Picture 1: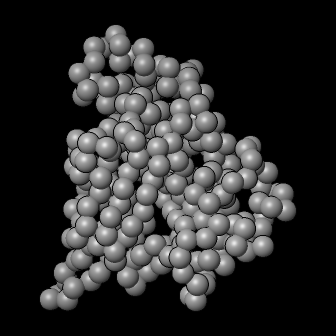
Picture 2: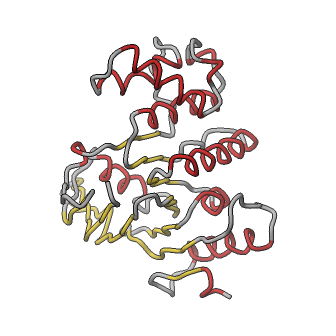
Picture 3: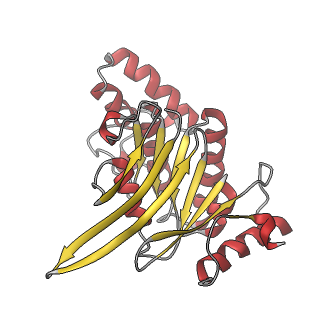
Length: 261
């Protein structure tokens, strides 16, 4: 895959004879290897857009092109998904959960197990390969879910508030781990979050969305060097910029952090 092109995506629902517009003419270019974070208030269409990218929903208007071959079908592309809920099979051990997608891909049991172990090591859970989900902490279960999504070797990784239910300390640890994995794999990531500090820490680009109807309001490039220091003046300044962007109802268009100097 060489990037994703989102063109004029709109989504309508009908309830009690009324048309409800969830997304209105969304346009976005996601370059290969980018880490995109999407922020905005509840109801602005962040997860709806992610579900359209995943192929769970069909757009009412517009199209998504996934690569240079002009494929518009999500199911024809290698896409990995990490949900807010852990979504692990309780009857499978950690390594068996990670192996699931590989088995569905047709790999042999031996090869699937080898790859699954490698990705458990990548998320620092090699020691927990034979442990069941109920024996793991919430953070460890989500790391297994990340390993499962990555082991499939997707071109595009979709993450829907994957750490939202975790305590602050665990969340910070997994943010660091996510950055570490991204730097190693250079996967293209589309990451939905309500947490502006998380977006500032992880993203190469932040998409700010607004509601009623859901639309892209601003796209902000984050060019801070990595690893990023959440206590630095520049980090705090950008986080404040994101907060102001969500509240701001006057300015529109694509900006960079330099526009707020």
